[in-house]
Image (cartoon, rainbow, N blue to C red; front, side, top):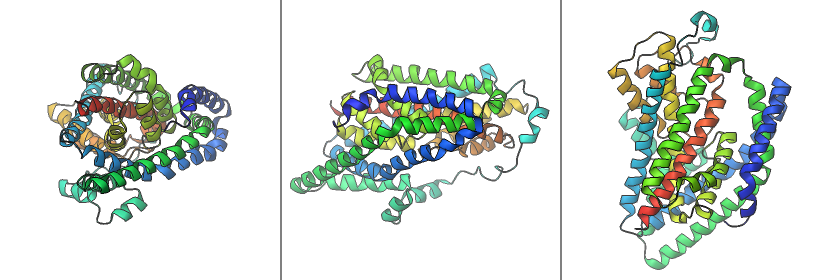
Length: 405
């Protein structure tokens, strides 16, 4: 993965400059900035082209490598526990901030009544336990690959990887080397695609800024500010503390290296699109083993959604306050459980999250006001994705320490 390394080191700075130029262009051009959308879509499409095979090959190779040691089960359990634990903390932080700062208070219902819609009322049901389990296990793994069903791909890839780890040494070594070489080839492709990242990021930011404008954002400005504050606390507080306590990497070094990953996530609003650059950064600049990154990061890009969890919690508080609904212990527990479970398995791609519907319904909060948030969801999505990928990387360096014990 060392080819293109020099460019990758400077990528974050170049992307940040492109982002600001894109924002300026979007503000100046308004809705006319949509002419750049095809360029941005092409950039994201090129990355998506490689992401599915990269996830499958990485997970198979990572599981095969981890399966060699006695600590494989412990590493898997620790990875899931870390992702689940930080998600619960994220939801609780969102609820606390929502109750302290009350982002939904002071907004006149009459002024936004025209934006209300019943479109999402019947879209918030969560699948049952058995429906979820059956949805994870693929009846046809090839079909799951073709359709891009990430959870099913993960499930099959993990089992195949552990199956390879049980083979005789010569067969295992042959397949592991093949998977490593294939992973390197896929990462090579993505890193070459990243050469046009500044152009793609400029186009995405110009289109996003020009399209949603700032008129709707002013209505939810308080929610947006509170959201940013909670994201900062979770990113630089929770993750920093975990890294300080459980890894060999200093939090300062971690954030110095991870900023380029955050910049790509911020602009693409996709954990999957950021996967290759996250793997590159963790391996080359944070010293995480390839076996760990191949297992932890693709898994995190699918099930670790702390930024989304914070969004669900704050959205619930926002609409409860908007409609004058008093939340009690039962409603808080419903939000915590639904937001935590719902955020796991969220597709790592951009777009309005309909799981917020399930969270609102679980707490008996009206969903008719959702268009108010979905109108500026892209902006929220960009921010929460940057937090999600940071959490993935923090888990990777922590797991790698335990793996090497």
